[in-house]
Length: 197
Image (cartoon, rainbow, N blue to C red; front, side, top):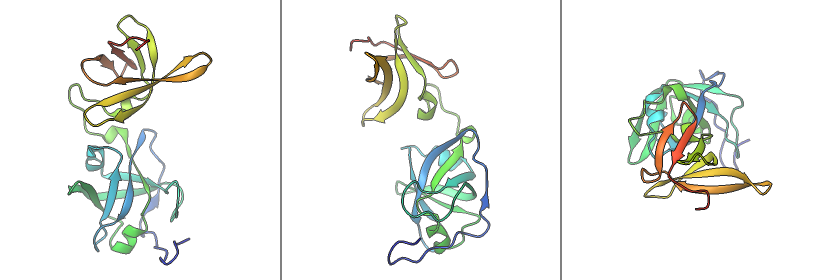
């Protein structure tokens, strides 16, 4: 159903149903058409949208809220994705004009984790840290990483841990002063932090 005063856009021909890869990560959503030739704007979930630039196969799922122009998962073959004044813009093989790009508005964008660029030394993708156990130097378990927050100058680990029969929250700055080691394969982060901080 189209929004009042706006005609429904037809889905681009050639978009094919696909199965979402097992390692798919949601990295953004399509905001709107950009220009007349099928380009579209993408709102990245990351300040560094390298995953969008490195993958040529994006998987789309309908918006969680609002108008849904398709159902299931669709494969979008990306011709080009680039930064344009702080916004990601992209074009795809199946999207030839503005109407086709508008039909994708609100779609959630997923890419396989395996297509992410390799992180540098002491760099980590947030998605790889979620679910890791956090312990201090003394071996005291402080919790499990539920999410990360960007507070401007630093990133903060948000942990969940059980206490008094319910789930509590603890925050630890994700900076070298407090983080000793990150072992993604071993699913463990060691920190210089006490349980009563």
